[in-house]
Image 1: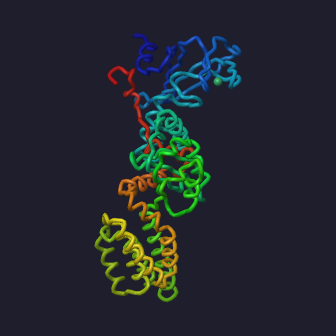
Image 2 (image 1 turned 60 degrees about the vertical axis):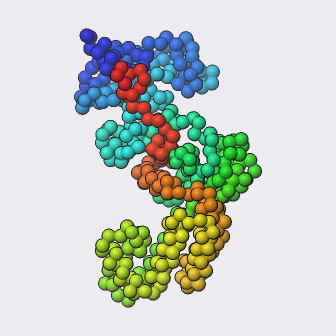
Image 3 (image 1 turned 45 degrees about the horizontal axis):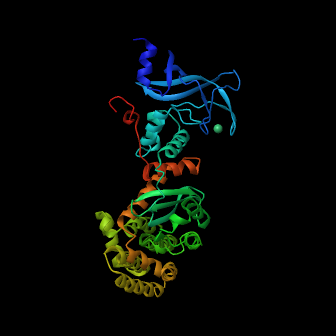
Length: 419
Ligand SMILES: [Zn+2]
């Protein structure tokens, strides 16, 4: 078999013939030619038999490695005049538009990105993190389920910070499928408005409940005419508990700062108390449990704050009915507002204001452990996205990992022998 024929079978680049194979330093160069006579616009698929000019455009793409060798595909492309896009270089069947990698290479990277951290993936595929970001953005565009916004009933909306300096993503998930179905840059009402625009009035009419945290922005967008004004707004209990944990941490910091003024050594020892206080009591290790017992004996403000946080958490731990939750919630609010602890007085006010929304979540059961787990996974993925320079890439990482995306690896494609 000739070398060119062998490479043709090895690489399986759609619609090409291998013309020449050469070895360079740590790289195999494979020159290919397109089989098709017609020129195709890479933006819209417009076809024409005529070239715009005779000047060839030399293009190259990274393909899957060949053993330890990097493999580069090279082709001389032609230019065409598209009525919609002007003079463009023709598209190729084996790579996505504007990509410097083949589809096979990108599909592999998209799959790896769902489980691998930045350092590992960059080392393995020999690409920088921003290139990985652009690759997964294209993979997402190709493999995202087009029906993801059909048949939504109960949805959750949430904001996550994907980078320092208040850079946020707004994400919408389906409670039924437990997948992230939509996302956009930014947060607040304006971002969620974009979701309802994509959803359209008819599909929005099917939305019965929307769960969220206590920031008012999203509720405003849901209430708007043409969006989902009849949907029940639910406040996720785990967001309520998160606020209590924050209030406790504020009290703890205050106590620690007072302590530092009096006794530096004691303050240093006290620093270890943080996790003993903030973690769930069942998750503590022996040392942390001992610290917690010490804090209980000491009593005072900090212990009062701790028992308040735990009281609020306990409201949502069991599978209590709406009436019981209402009673416990009210009891918590009156205790918190009389506690003399400023962060808890504020918290009581917030909980009272959103009482109906919290109870609706309990009543409809839209807030379950699965949803909280998805929320936690979103945060984990978004942490991995740190280091991306664009919100688009961060969002793509969330979608290829937690969205309705079917990953197809090069050997799983239908046209692969044995695949
Ligand atoms: Zn075009």
